[in-house]
Amino acid sequence: MFRRRAAPPLLLLALLIAGSACGPSTANRGPAPTPLPLARCDDSLGIICVVTFGVEPPSQMLVAIHVALGGFKELRTEIVYNGTRTDYTCRSSAEFPGNFYCTGPQIPLGSRIRVDVFTAGTKIILASGEFTVTALAMPTVPVGTLPPPGTAYPNQ
Image (cartoon, rainbow, N blue to C red; front, side, top):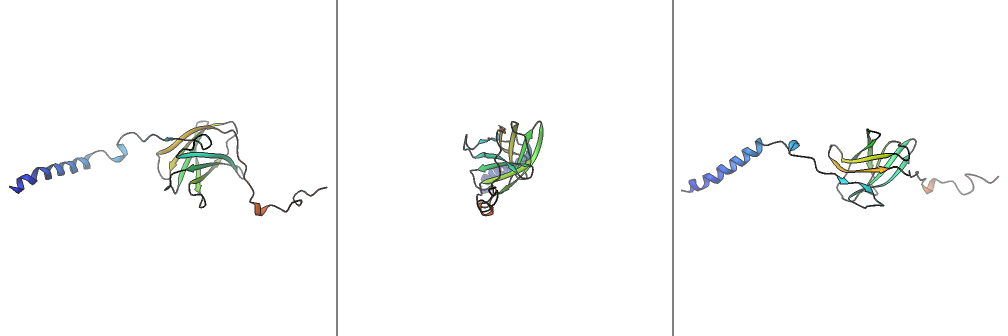
């Protein structure tokens, strides 16, 4: 009698396991998730935002990205400009683990671009946004490397 009661649940469990093994792979289970909106941190401090666009000497552009959620060790960024998609190499800061600095080809002021942010090694877009490059932050010189006052441009 015990065997008759246990058989239907075991059969159902076996069918569920077999059905899930024969089901579609995770790569084909529907549309990719909708990316988060990406905006400037000044306009909207979201989960992921662009802090600034800047110049990275000698002729590169820097995109500083802030991620409010922890757990991201690496990011990958692509910028679409004039129909061309370009990878920007991103690195994080040990002092500020939520900040990523992505560098790639310089884009002229006034250009309209789209910035797509991915986790490293995936093609799933975490965040995406469109921007007009209106200003580029210039790199700063560490205070310890500045020459003493009056020596850089001595009075004539």
